Length: 147
Image (cartoon, rainbow, N blue to C red; front, top):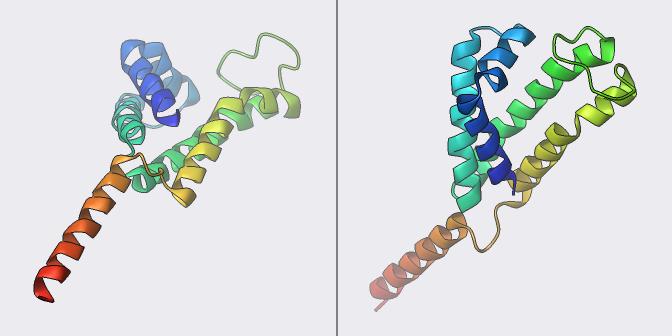
């Protein structure tokens, strides 16, 4: 599920410039065009890798970093009431409760990717399939050598 969300978010950064470059420009991030392209590509490629369960733990690391940076760059200013982004449509618009409301998707993605880093992708993933194939190959080589 996390892979699908990242894939979707990365696609939006390229399809709608206000979601990528425009947003990063408003936030004052350095090199907003390059940053948007990098983050969008990371989300598309990494999202596809998460969906297939390939290199899951490795891909989880940049996503954890991305979510922490996203939370810090967009929500601190919301807490302080200095956000260059539009305020939430309903009260509270600034402060602690506004941040808790607005941070929910980043927080869910952070928890999900942290879980994947710790636990791994599961037995139906390509990572697990490749691990089984390696184990079978090692066993076959071991059996051939012990004969």
